[in-house]
Image 1 (spheres, rainbow, N blue to C red):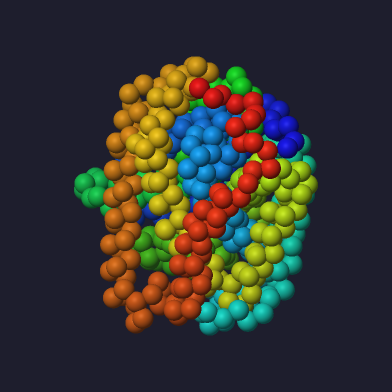
Image 2 (image 1 turned 135 degrees about the horizontal axis):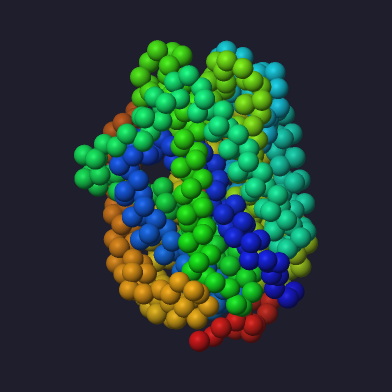
Length: 506
């Protein structure tokens, strides 16, 4: 087994952690979630969720990686032999997410080029699903789409090239370049957006507080959900990244910087997105609520339509917007891939080159499933099931396992306090042992209730009315498969005794 890599500087680690947290969801998910859950009032439960779940879990995972000096499977193994499977489950969730996340980056890369001549035309929705994706019926593949497959090759060539270079020369340098560039590009977008006609009405809609909504349990669930999914917690990333920290590292302070930086970028994204949506609503003479959308629809259907209406510099704004998606996507994808590359190195003793070739190469090959004519429907199904029944459940299992079953919170608190300026107290322990498990448990209950209600919302009772085959193979089989394969991988013999190594055994 090779000697464990290390970050070159503290700033390099923080930028990488921020790069992992700041992703596509910050730009296309947070603004819509905030607007739909009370506008400015949403920031009250959002901040509470950040301080009682987001940052506490970040501190916990930073401490786990720093203390046990390993990938997620090795870290869980060193905590307790029976827990290794949880680490593999987290790694496999990351693997699945990497396969389709890369395709969305490929779309954004294509649209960066399309922006030069506004190739999408007037019918932006028809262009995206018809001309570009060549979307076919749900449940069918329909062959590769060259316009998606070619940029996908470019995306994976860049990602694998960076990963081959390692932690210090690859990941750290890439994040040092991409994160400042992303911030500068997005600041330019925001400055342009707030000067558009109607921008103030959009910002008023975004920030205007509806305090009646904060008494709704659904709003608090939305706040915790946003924090949980936004910070890259509970699926192996932060454990892996913190395992590369030097021994004397300020764990708690790093977590606060990462958490607040991520939230700051989300706020910036909200300002930019709603300024542009306010402009669109003004141009069309409709209320702002009629143009609010999140996710893929916002990025690849609504925004191109808005760019068409710009009074000047349409092409430049388009290039900058889609470039910001590309940069945010790359920094997150690199962190996601690093989880299973590190796991392969630790478990099987692979060299860095071999681990990247096998792990990264396999995820790149699987990604081409989403570059087919049925790719969007497959991606939508996999994303829904792996996030709803993978990440959410995994987070609950992680917290309950560590706080209640293994009772490691005091051990982790002592470890973090030994190296950190900001000392942990009862706030951290109560958050992880009581508040977070209760909230995640309620989120899971609400998720199951919502899915049961959904049975009556479509003709066949499936998510989005998709055919049974797609739901089974792209949904349940994927969500359950990562658990079963994770358990199986835990039974493989370690290449090197996992109890050996330079880590804190206390």
